[in-house]
Amino acid sequence: MAGAYQFQSPTQYLTYHAQLQEWADRNHVLLEWQLLQTEYVNGVSVHSVYPSIAGNRVTWAVGRGRQMKHAKDASAEVLINTPGALSQALNGRG
Image (cartoon, rainbow, N blue to C red; front, side):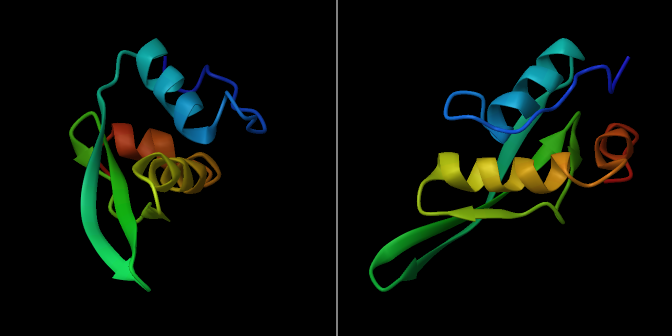
């Protein structure tokens, strides 16, 4: 059943992104990341990504970061901290 995973405060090794992937793995849900854009700010690339959960694009949960892993973590944080968002994404209402 979706939602049985207990999310916790992130650590260096158990980031929001890692926890979201664990949630997806435990619930047998495909978690993919879509690159929205890459901008260059003062010569530094900034990536914007959003998740796709079970084929449902969650375009409102955009994360940004200088590295893809930071962008994914920022996006996962938004998704995890929005009540009911994971259930909605699973049901195609993301």
